[in-house]
Image 1 (cartoon, one colour):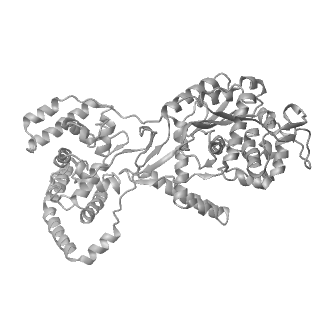
Image 2: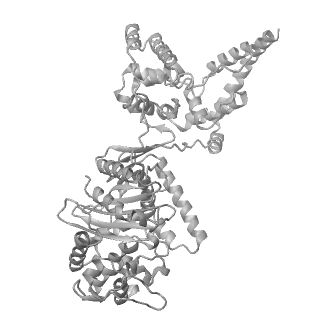
Length: 619
């Protein structure tokens, strides 16, 4: 009885509602001032959509990608008409005729809901569905439905039908965190939308109706039945013949599901950090932070930078890098295998191409996982004698007339309260600078720093990218690598590239950053500058080569016409270093424990030299 009364009430009220609607609609069209006010009150801005960031190696092959949602937006002209018809005929056959909502469909839905005493029957147009996706909840109430109608009406005024359809097809949910028809094609079939058969197009078009029920990875048969239903709709509407519909149904569907690529995490993690630096440089944030009046202002700039980085990444970018995938793979395999023999021992290395000054390989730690602590650029450790060529010897030959054959006192030394000692407490008489360099004597290095002058020496070091050097480091202890904080492996390798030909520009992994259309957004464009004279370079290369042949670098054997290096050991044997170069590469290697620990027991194994040998040989 109550249902009968409800039916009669609805039938009686609908003519009244229709008259009211017609009156209101005509008034809206006539009252332009009200339209303007409504448009201002309902701001239908496009939502912020996060697209994938893709990292590519030197061969422009993808090796890593990051995304929470898999998306691949396409212009409407790139979406096959077959797909457009599938959705229009099954979801909103009057799409090109209505004003955002279909009043007759609403009438049918209200009548059906009243019959069933529920709110389940839908009457949503494609426009309404897009409004719901973007701005509203999926709550099934008549209040929400009214709001949806107003928004849909306004969206139709602010957008063309083509824009609405394109946005809808690019934003609807296809299960498994996949959004949009283009992304569904690459995710479920591993190929672009325009390469899918019409049977495959119908199959993925079946998913959005109920992404949980029609998730093809869990309910393949249900998705297949929905696909066949959509094909039947096209047959019924005369869009395809019955015979062709049966042909489409009979075609086999074979999924080739996409897996997120996460190769070479140590390199990929660094690239994301360098991307932030690149954006900071190009957008002026570096200068802002360097000239900040106080820490609070600097923090504000840092937050603004992070917001900018997030916005760039969210739009979907491709980052082209210098990664040598085979070399990275071989380096990781060898170093990991070597470290397994000594529990808890860690290592880091960076390899740079001398010609391009591009980073081709990074080892960030044993069994490195993405976003782990990356020891190649985040671990700040004391460099020991590996710093001597940069802070002491090269400045000596650059600023004085001394040569490797000049002699220097290797005996005891005290400057004020600072009294350095040679390795093992040994005391030497006068030795040549070449001998002092070869065997890494300490007191001669301090005397040479005194000759150059601390400020002059640090002026030379400041040509490079050592970001943790402080004013407190301007002391004689720095001659032996004694610093307040220390240096990173990347900083050491970067600076040592200057010994290849005296020219320097910062080493980078990133070649360029492009948007989804291939337009270049960011790229490094520094020019090489001369930091050492040809005479200094010739002298330093000879000294570094002598270390390998006759000094602390003995045991290095690399097939190259030139090999030069310098080792470093810190107090209590907490850190072992080697940095050097061949004709092709420059690299730095560090081994140690995350919690510093004496490594004297493994000194004879020369693990760092073995790593250097291998990574400078691997291609």
